[in-house]
Image (cartoon, rainbow, N blue to C red):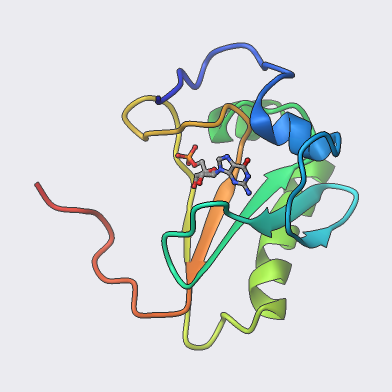
Length: 126
Ligand code: 5GP
């Protein structure tokens, strides 16, 4: 079910549990600001999620309330993960779903990285 991007942070969300090591994940990369791991239900041959370590519900929350260091660290981590995975050539797609119409399901900011085949048009039509 899609969430409201303006809701307060819920410490029991699934990615908060992953950050606390209460739920296993297949980690790709971790640093001070970010954790990257394989999506449990991949929608492309390569489907990685990158999340900030801080308690941010959505891109809206993070871009408004994240510190400059957290934002720079997170953006650099996303780029680093894609680069290290060899995705820059032939290319990849970033996606961040925000709120109900954006179909965000997990209320902790995450950026999807998709790669591994031609990904087609940007959005499903209709
Ligand atoms: P959203 O629709 O919120 O942008 O995407 C949430 C993503 O989280 C989905 O692609 C879903 O497959 C993934 N996901 C949900 N629960 C888990 C989990 O427990 N572990 C991992 N690795 N991914 C999850």
